Amino acid sequence: MNKLKRILLVDDSKATNFFNKTIILKTDCVEEVVLVTNGEKALHSIQTSSVPDIIFLDLNMPVMNGWEFLEQYEGLSEHCKNSVIVILLGTKLSTEQEKKLTSFSRVMEFRDKMLTKEIVLEIISTYFKDSVS
Image (cartoon, rainbow, N blue to C red; front, side, top):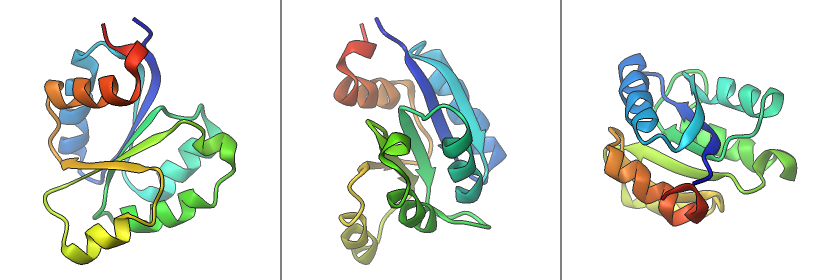
């Protein structure tokens, strides 16, 4: 089994980040889970550290929300986006938000904000077949 190198969790809720990080680490499928609290910090992390394999992105955050992050992210160099998948996290999307989502090619799914081990493993096995045994 090949572990993913890095997962980036972007959410302003420290409790949600802690919970989701714990769940992700229990899968034993990733070497590092990085937590940031807004889109601006996420962009900085992507540009100055190793590029993540997966970005779990909350939509509603202060400073730079998920939508603003996605708009800025689309403009990054291919090196910063190569093979990265983005999973949006939240409670529910409006019809308007669902339509808006189609304009962002890197967004693969929308999932409930609170991850489970099964959901994480399903996402990894879907997009990174060599990383789950």
